[in-house]
Length: 324
Image (cartoon, rainbow, N blue to C red; front, side, top):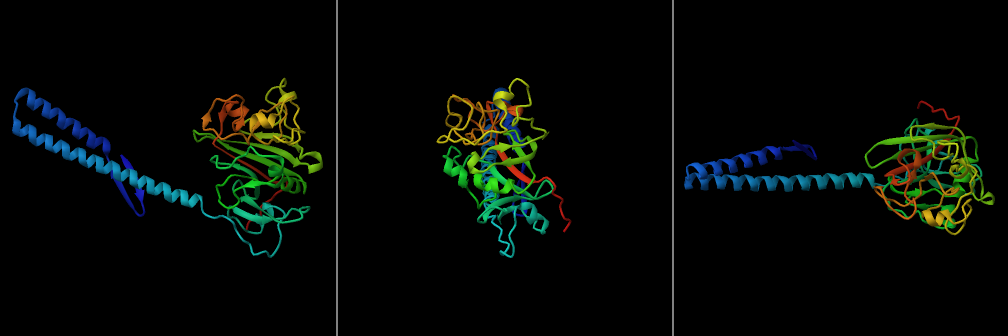
């Protein structure tokens, strides 16, 4: 039974039942022709079958049209402008401050970390107890993440649509995480609809003079620890991303004799090269390539499965939400 919603109405169409009736009528026709040969009954039943088949096609077409309409409506909701203007009455250092001022809606807000010379737009995720500042999002492959150093330093992507892809910028990420002790949370979704997460304590990104080196501490979560290489003691020398400088195809800072960023088509904190690369190419699940250059989180799906969506976000470790 199909149930298709359109506005305030629902149309329920049992296509299997109609097809079954059509099959029965064809069987009756065959029985009449074989046993009795009644041309009148044969013609009448053939007409009934054609009528039913016509109705089935009409119902199928209507279902397709209604589904397309609902899909368009859903896409429109996903693509609506999500920039939220708080009127400039005060400046916020991160999304945790915005949340505790009583603003609980997901969207892009202006923030200004303490050392940042200017304000910039950042997506605030008010789920998971609220107050998360998102610095990376992958959702549909609409943005190219195989970019040069300057792009990753300044940030790029869609800072308007609530499901748009973006990188907040290494410079902004440095200002944000150097205000105090921040927790990193990574939300992952595969193409089968399953969700996992990884969380790290004491996440920090150093400044440009240190090539935006990344550090983090204890892991918790359900996706496995792909960021520190703790999943096996013999791989930490090449799979630990902690203490690694950021690399792009035009700025090679990895420990590999080649250029990881060039081979993996992404900017990232590469070692030799990775057990996690969340800025890789957007494939749809299992893939084949010369290198493992998809959106990879090794401890969940291995190197040869590219994830559907990723959200990387931070929040102060001592965050306590106000009940407003």
